[in-house]
Image (cartoon, rainbow, N blue to C red):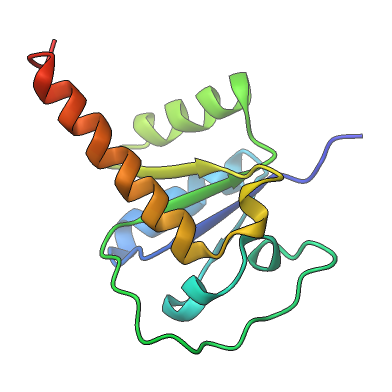
Length: 134
C-alpha cells in the first residue's frame, strides 16, 4: 500500500508561483496544502493531519521567516527527483527551503524546522565560500 503523498507550502507570497507549484503537484497526484502564517507554532505532525497530534495554542510572539518552505511527506528518492524536475520544467523558480518529513521532525514545531533549515543553509553557503565555489 502506497502512503499518501502530501506537500505543505508555507510563506509563498507570489500567487503565480504558488499556482504553478500546485498545478505540477496536482498533475503528479500529490495533495498540497497552503499553511497560514501562524502555522509556525504547530508541530509538523499536526500540520500533516497525523494521528496523535493536537493543536498548540500560539503563545509566542510573531515568528518572522521570510522564506518559502516546501515540506514533502512520503516523497523520496526517484519520486522526489521527479517532482523537482517537473517543477523546474514548469518554470517554477527554485525553492531554497525544502524538507522531507521524517519520524523525527514530525515532533518539531514548524518554527524549529524552519530555523534548523536556515542554519543548515547558512552553514552550506559558508562551506561553499571556503571551498571557492567549485
